[in-house]
Length: 79
Image (tube, rainbow, N blue to C red):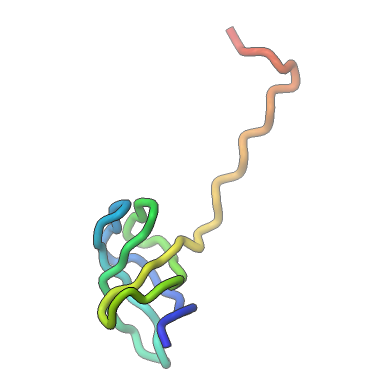
């Protein structure tokens, strides 16, 4: 029932460690322990991709990525 739920990080999630997220589940806002492969700051929107236990979830960020840096037009390095 949690797989695919969306929410937000309420206590920063360190890479490989535990943080806390608030998820919208059946119209209710519930808190769960959360793990992520990468660090996630408080306020980051997330999506549940796994449920290792009844009280914890594996999440990924749904925040838009920063725009890519365009390649240099000269192909060289700037002095």
